[in-house]
Length: 136
Image (cartoon, rainbow, N blue to C red):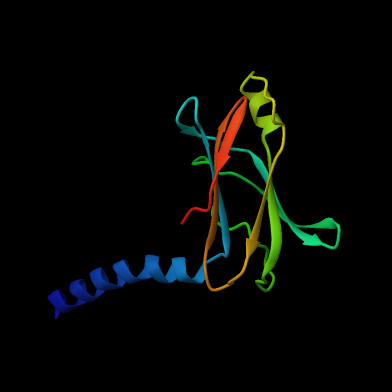
């Protein structure tokens, strides 16, 4: 009986993280890496906005964690399709590094066509350039 309980507890420990991840699924995530150092960019404010007519409506804002990530940027509201942008507020981050930058804000526009998929927007950042793509 003791072996059965140990085996059951071990099996449950493998299931719990996946259940937590499934419960915490979010439509949108971002990640910032500093190309010059190869390290993440923690503490960068990132804003999510939705295109409405000729303007943009703010939906959410968060700061990158110590790994340069925001794992769940979509707000606590129903997921929807449409045109969106994330704005990476990089100027303050560079100032905290005692470095200047040519791009104090980096807006990245994208289209969400299927709310059953996950959308990831990574940003590879340097003082005078950046690169982005749709990640996984």
